[in-house]
Amino acid sequence: MKFRKLLSIGAALLALGGTAATGVMVHGAAFASVASNAKKAAREARAAQKALAAHKAAAAVAHAEQAVANDPQRGDYRTLLGQAYLLAGRFTSAGQALRDALALNPEDGRAALNLALASIGNGDWGGARTLLQAHAARIPAADLGLATALAGDPNAALEILAPAVRAPDATARTRQNLALALALAGRWGEAKAVAAMDVAPDQLNARMLQWASFARPANAYDQVAAVLGVQAVQDGGQPVALALAKQPDFAALTPTPTPTVSAEPEPQPEPIPVNEPAPAPVPVFKPAPVRMAKPKPVKPLPPKPAPVTAASGPYVVQLGAFANAGVARDAWQKLSGRVAALRSLKPQGATVPGGTATLYRLSVGGFARNDADGVCRAVKTGGGSCFVRMAAGDAVASWYKPANRVGIAAR
Image (cartoon, rainbow, N blue to C red; front, side, top):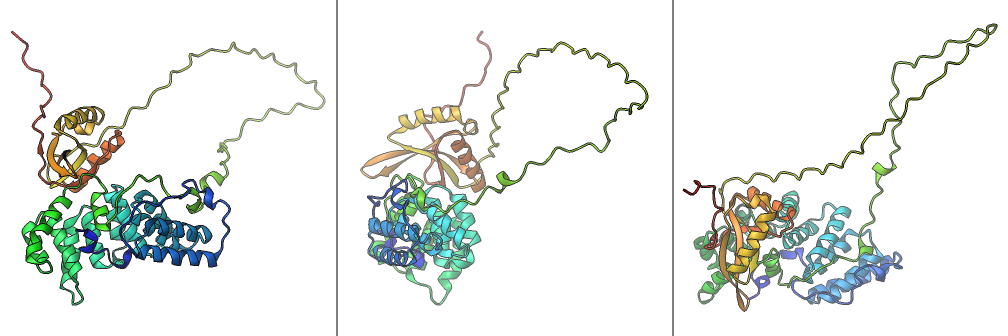
């Protein structure tokens, strides 16, 4: 059962679903000699739209890239390119193209919504929420609410979707978006009641099971990929030649200020009378140079990790999904040894189905949203990977043993 058949990202996406594009010159060589050609760009854009409507990701990417290459200052072409990358499961490339689109047209709500989805796929939930809040007036409520829930704030999503459901033009998809937001907020009874308004009784339990799995993602991109109906792929970014030209570095062009001159004038030598002989020069003795030991370079102290507050909320920071608890325990020992912010926390574990195998998820949690974001930033700074999600069956790992405290000396 495809999520894209149940939920709505509305008219913001021209098409959903597909696989990675092939035959694209990653380093931009294919565009190095392309000159601006507005007519060709328009033809390529129309072809890209048709490919999107037909869920042909490779063709959509190829045509959209040519549209941008032939008319790089058209923000709507870059939005189209971002949509094509999303269709191909290329979240990094989509984010780059859509940021350029917003730079050219800051009022493009469609580009903002798509950029928020790409940010969620890349694990940047905070950035996604900021985008959605800034462009809320230009994004349909049904789309805004669902995207806000995917960005890790289902309670804010409910505040957006509840009025939208009561509107005269509310659709079944709007109601299903509300039901999913309720599920992500942990309000499963209400979620089932709202979903039952449009789902046949014999399919309702299956819908709830699907959403239960959806609420426990193994990777940062799982939820948004499921909603879009795409498969995330390894992505090195859009071709370099398609990026907007960088503005000049005005700081580098600023002339270096001249040294400040003291207001007190330097003493001038007294003039020598014309008719008197000049005094004999006074010999100047140069002191022997003093050799000083070369100072040893001082290594800067590493920044202190932000303090972690006590558990006070429903969010967890997922540190990885592993084949079994033993592998997760080894990963915890290595990661907590590198990241000071984790040392005062208790690792949590949960066993979840993952395709044909069972995965063991490693997390720390019980945080408010801001605290969870801070812990995840500390993990990434320490070289780890993580993402924030709602707690779902996470409990203190059975293998966890607190560090031994210094006890009384043996007698």
